[in-house]
Length: 102
Image (tube, rainbow, N blue to C red):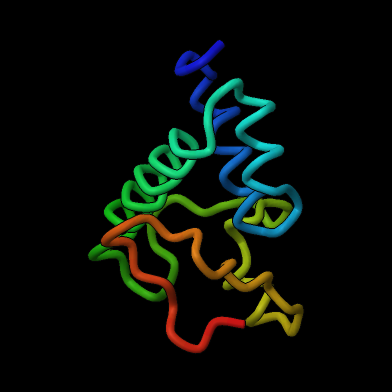
């Protein structure tokens, strides 16, 4: 299956790793890829999400994640729930990590 995982499955694995629910080793094994390939996919996914969010208003205009989604961390934080901080060392090259996260 190397390199042929479903894009939704790949995104699900990235979100699980970023939330701390799964290790990179586990995600790579489940996807049938190496850790190096996983890190490349993760960086591409994060860069795409950042690009998709650029220029959006803080009011939340555009597509909204459901509250069950890990992408809903900002909303949960506003509602008083603690969102999972990004895991150090997992951001791809050129992908900013929020200052003061954690």
